[in-house]
Image 1 (cartoon, helix red, strand yellow):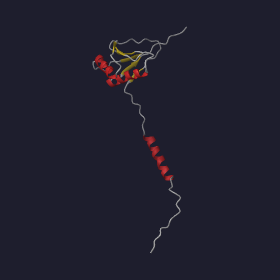
Image 2 (cartoon, rainbow, N blue to C red):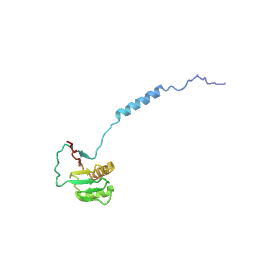
Image 3 (cartoon, rainbow, N blue to C red):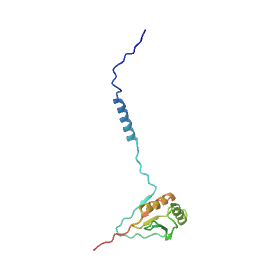
Image 4 (cartoon, rainbow, N blue to C red):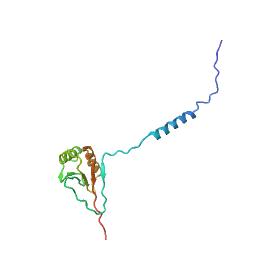
Amino acid sequence: MKFRRQRKNDQGINLTPLIDVVFLLLIFFMVSTTFTKESHLVLDLPEADGKVDETPPEQIEVLIGKDGDYSINGRPLINRQIDTLMKALQDVSLGDTAKPLTITADANATHQAVVTAMDAAGRMGFVHLKITTKQPDSES
């Protein structure tokens, strides 16, 4: 006896159910994904409205020069490394990260220098961070 398979004239695989499943998975992942904005630093950005904020005596001030050189409470640092900045912040704050920290940067300082100072403050645990601005010159 010779058995022969009957061959149907197949046109191919029907992809419609596969596409439906892919779209359902896509919708599921889009709905179940959460977008959270995590922030490790609380920034108190001052407004440049001309009001002068009196500096509290227990405040730590990080100055950034136009060349990216750092100075903490008037004492210049020996280099621009983040480890040096973190060590200086530790020495000045004596481990008290509740003290307010103010970052004052030159207008020509690089953005990277400011971000490095903010990163060092965040790694140390400072949460009260201010970035200072100056009042724009009024032209008559």
